[in-house]
Structure formats: structure tokens, C-alpha cells
Image (cartoon, rainbow, N blue to C red):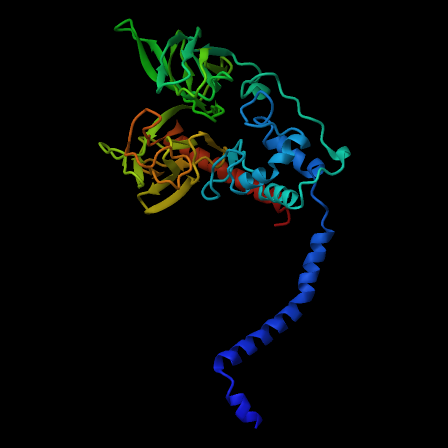
Length: 458
């Protein structure tokens, strides 16, 4: 009788019964583990604003998020931070803030890397998920003091600038299209000097309108008696902090030279009267000697003769290939584009082996922050003669691109904010064969010494 009854149970129900039995066993077996994990979480110290979160904000956020600076809200006190807790969590988990868009592939040793560590991100997540408690006010760190107004980027490191070159004043209307301001201003240098660092500082009110502020060196031409452009000296775009020139790579500030400015303004709804953008130079000592020449150039991501066109609701990809006459060291990499650029990579192709090596990748790029990624001294990529620098840009003209003002438009290359660009700003130190080999040998020596220090028993 029992056999007959069992034979009438449908196979599906038999499977269900078996599955329920297995689940019950698993639940019973895993219960101690789950209880232990919950106990571990309960035993973990509470994450509070005062002890854990405030130091992170001081180090990574308050330079911009304070009264009178460029952040849209101040994040200095608990009362200021608490209403934004969930938004802060969302931004840091997406790695949109702090505004340093750089992927975790390729070279990771960077100077002035603003990215939060995974531990800091998880601290903020745990704090928000636990209700964003203040904690004990006695645990609050002492407030960080900031100077009134905007200070020079490298003032703490190098002191006040040696030379400041301002633009002539320009009044930007509240409404209208792109404007370009191109005054020529004397530098005032009386002898050739190697530049140690440089930084561009827009005015506080003009910063939202200053899309970029580039500058070229102009020097007297003996034949014509006129000033002619020598080379690009600096490039600024919103979010860029400046550049430091390594001791072995001189960028010369010539005697009796002038700066030809190229400031690109975009009206944002408020008049900016008599706006001035400033360029500061810190100089090496007069007797400083550098082995090599460093320069900053605009490296195209378009094949020679190619054009950039992005269809409405479409995407596009561009590539540029660059070689050098001598071995070189790539000191920094900065993608540049407008509203449709969403990512860029830099790679090195070694023709002798066919190896393609990833150097840097930025896959969530935004026009709001033009960050220069400066490589640590022993990590800056070295290219032997014949190696190819491969630059790839990715564009999104669809509604999925949050920065896209109008996906219904055809977009072509151009200088207007509504157009698109396809290049990278890269600083390069031009070496010789002996210098290239010496840098490789020095790096290998330091690496061996570090291994001995880290593992003295080996």
C-alpha cells in the first residue's frame, strides 16, 4: 500500500520535497556560522563621524567643500555633513568623489593620488548604513585651517611663486556663446631659468566659466625682430592643479619672453567683471643643470587626416599612435575632451615583441575635472626608441551619458563647448640611449634594495 501511494507522487513534488530537505539541512548547518558572523559584526566597534569619518573628510574633501571654495556645500562640521550622508556614500562608492577618475589597472603609483582607499570607502559606507552617528565629540579632530581665498597649489611645498603672469582683465557677459581671450603679456624674466613648477589660478568667480587657460611662450626672433611662438608652456582646464618638472628634465623659461594666453570662457548666468587668470612659476636655482629636455604637448587621438563625428544617440572610438626619435619617459597623462568623452586609455606597443602594455585607463571621465595623472618617479613609463604610444578615446552621445547636453545632435570636432575634442596632454622627458639605460639600472638597483629591506632574512 505504501509503495502504491509513493508511486502516485508526481516527480516534481518529489524534487521539491528533496530540495526543501536539503535547504533545511543547509540552514541548520549554516546557522552557527550566520550567528557567529552576526556576533562578529555586533562586536565590531561602531563607526562614528567624530572618530572615523571626520579625519577622512579633512584629508580628502574639505579643501574644496568649505565656505568660499568650489564645492557646492561645506563638509566641515557634523551638522553640515549629516544631511548629505547618503549622497556622500553614493559618490564615494561610485568613485566619483574625490574627483580623481583613474581605474585600477595599469600603473597605480601616482603622485597626488586623491582616490580614497577601499578601507576609507567602507568606513563611510558602514557609518551611513548605521545611521550616521556623531559619536563622542571628544573624538573630533582639531579643525583644519584654510587660508582666505584661493592659495597657490605649491605654496606649502615651494613657498610663494617666483613669477606671476596675469592675463589682462576681461569682462564676461552673463549669457552668450563661447568666448576666447588671447592677450599677450610680458613675463619679466631677465635670464634663462629652468622651471621647477607652474600652476594656473582662475579667479573664484571666474572659475566656473574658465573651461581652459592655455599659455604659449613667445621669444624674440633675431631675423624678423618680432616675437614668435616657441612652445606650449602650460595647460589649465577645470580641476587641474598644476605641474612639477622633475630635476633631470628642464623646461626653460627664456629671458625676455612673453606669454600668449588662450583663455576659453563659457558664460554661466552671471557677469564676471574684469576677470583675471594668473600663471605662477617656481624656478630652480640659477646654477641648476638638467640632463634632458621636458615638454608638454597635445597628442591627438585621430589618425592623420581623420575627423571626429558622433551620430545622434551613437558612440564612437578614436585612436592615435605616436613614436619618438629618442627614448623617452612619460611623466604625466591627462585626457582631454568635452561632454561626450567618457573614457581614455594610454598603452605602449613594443614592435619587437608585439606586446601591448596598459599604462593608464580612465573609464568614467568627466569634463568637470581635468586631472593630470603624474607617475611616481620609479613608475613613469619608459619607451625605447621605436616603441609606440597608443591613445584610445571612447565617446557616448546617448542619453545614458549623464553629462550629455543633447543626444539628438550630430557632434563633430571643434573648440566650442558644444563640439568635441580628441587628444591628451602629456609631459615627456626626451632621453638619450645612455640615459635610458641608466634610469633602468637605477630603478632595478632601488627595487633590489627595497626587497632586501622588506625581507632581511632572504
